[in-house]
Structures are given as structure tokens and as C-alpha cells.
Length: 293
Image (cartoon, rainbow, N blue to C red):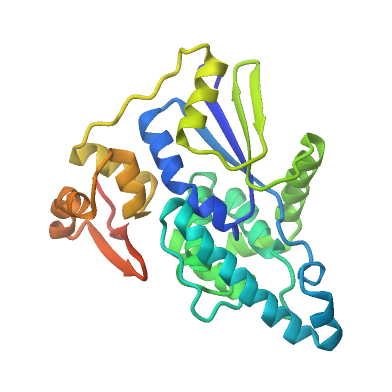
């Protein structure tokens, strides 16, 4: 750890802003190959949706108030699509209801995934965001979280046990205490550390700012190096990220347009090792169940 950068992101699985930062993180991951450890601290963005609905709407009816809040939230998500370019689809968006009034289930689910299989937890987080923002699933519901766990390849019985037995709750409370101790007041926020040096950034930043902070903390010792554009490098990335967007591949490898990306991945598509998933406003590629050698 001493010779690596630690990048801790304070976030919530429902956050569109963190979802739109994935292309930046893929560029950091590939340009600082093996030099950055990524971590996520759950920060519970929506503790109680009734604190966020319009007071006048709430006076009329809880269901009406939440329905109108969901509509406003969908507009916020759609506006965030322009930040990173990752596809967002809000068709039929109903994340909150009178039965599901917090984003806590999503936060607990990530902590449960960590306890089941730490190596797959970040893939679970990505797929949970995808389910929420691209597939537009009501992921505040346990049955939807279980679908994501299955898709990630987690042991569902263990996942459900940690979700319900208090162990995920305990770890979530530890995350929230960390947020309180550091005075986190904006999401996403980032804690970037190198040896004894650290920087807490409580606002959305881009790739170049990350590079500058990393350079400052390491005294210029850690610098970005573009990855090689070959199938081996692509396969390595897909083994870490079995579901990934075209935008992330563009940023990771420095492509100019979609045609270049499709040409680059075509050998894997033709062999059946990956498939293309077309969604409104863009596309993803997903590794086959058999995996990549």
C-alpha cells in the first residue's frame, strides 16, 4: 500500500454523479495501472425521502408526494447524463415508494456484497448502479437487489444472511461514522492518500485534477502512462469489469469515436467472448459467462 495511491470515494449506489464518473475512473485505472487502490465508503444519500419531498405535496398525500419527487429525481438523473456521457434511461422510474423510503437498502446491499466476496463487491456496485440508472429498476426493493447479486455471481444465501443479520448494518454504520469523522458534507467526495500525505476533495473533479493531486501527493513520482491498445490489455480490463460502457473504453484507451471502439472489440464479439448491449443513448459490452482467458 505504501507505494500506491489510495482513492476512497464517498458515495451512494443510487448516485448518478458517481455513475457518470466511471469513465474517469477507468482512465485512472488504466493510466496508473497497478498504482491506485480504489475503495468506496457508503454515505447514505437519502435517509428519509419524506425529508426531500415538497411539503405542500406531502400535506396532500404521501403517494402523490413521492411520485412527484421521483419525477423530479428522474429529471436530475437525465441532466447528469451530459457530465460523463454514460447512458441514462428514466422510463417508468419509481425508485422510492411509501414502502421504500430510503436508499439504505442499496447501501446495505453493497456492504453485504463486500462480506460475501470482497473481490466482486465493486462489480456488484457497478451492476447495482446499472440496474438503477440504465435498466431503471426499483433497487430499493430486496428482490431487485437479489437479482443484482445473482447477476454478479454472489452466493445469494450468504448475501441475504449478511443483509439481514446485522453484519452489513454494522459495517454500514462504520462507514457513516467515517463520513461524520471526516466532515463529509457533499457527495461524491474523495480521500486521496499517498504514504503519509492526503487530500480530501469534497466536490466533483475531473481526470486532470486527479492527476494533479496524485502528482502533488507523490512529489511527481507517480505519473500516468497510457495503456497499450491490444486485446490482452482489453481482456485484462474486462476481467476486472465484466460489464463496461463504450464511453469507459473510449476514455481508457483514447479512442476518438464509436467506430474505433467497435473495431477494437470486434474479435471478442465475433468469438462470442463478449456481447454488445444496446441501450437508449449508448451501449455496453458484457463478458460472457464462460469468461475470458
